[in-house]
Length: 383
Image 1 (cartoon, one colour):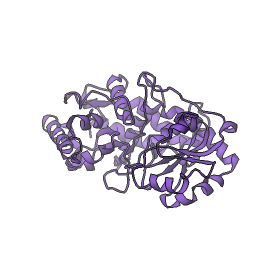
Image 2 (cartoon, rainbow, N blue to C red):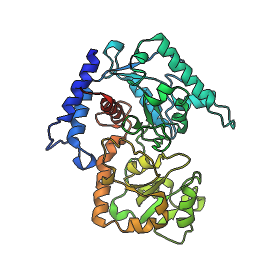
Image 3 (tube, one colour):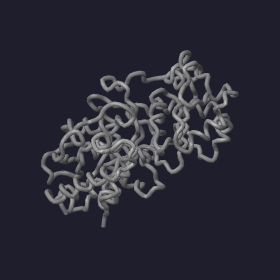
Image 4 (cartoon, rainbow, N blue to C red):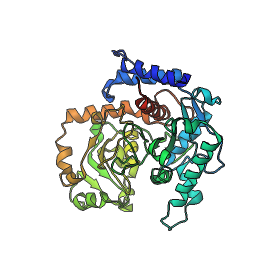
């Protein structure tokens, strides 16, 4: 067993026997499944983890982050990982994890033929890339890719791995499209990547915050394009405009946005509806967290971001697709005391979903890296 592998075994044993945390000013226990386990795991990640980044691959697909829009999570992680000095090592013999530094968004922009509906060139490109690093370096073949990871927020990020069996089956995939029903995303090994919509890369934290509970006059709000199977049903039941409590639209009408913008609606609503689109993921979940609005997630089979450590019942509502007709009843049944608790938890949760030009402890960059580390430990066998 190599020294890095022994360190992982040691870390897993330490986490299994994590001391109980009674008080930690940086962590709020109700947000977590087990705050003691998370705290010990995070501490060991900071102390031990080393990541080797392949230098292979040319721009724009590799080493060129895309920092704007709904797929920005993969670009921000790529940028901050390559700039990192704490976790990155140039000595692969010390590495616990190996990062494949490409952008699925850049892959799509560079190789996809518009309106062709053909993702295979993208999949073949990734297959050939993995085969090239496997033939050039000993690291992939040593574990068949199980200590390698990728980070892809584009909807197609999962599908483009399927032409390489080991990449699809063994590699840790941090994906926004974390759909447990398709057989690509594997719960417990893969990581659900938060989809963060970045409008201004120079100011990623612009507009953070929201109104107090007493000034949130709207029960539930949604506005967006009508694609996928869920949104048309949501609009069918709640978009007729007859219910003042339920502000449910397609694209936000100009007559409405002139009086109150999309962001102002989220800041003024108790619940923000986050239905899936073509895929299970939605940037509205993180937007709701940013604007301190309790997210209502409607996407069967969606593995929620950082699900391995966060307790989403503490700060969100998950509604089955079949229960859309009962949506108002479900939300109205939540007591004011329970709602205030969830909304307070959202404020405490917010720091775990924020991008910073220079990462800070427990922010979204570190949470993504921790989930990759944590799930790698899950795969380690202790004899």
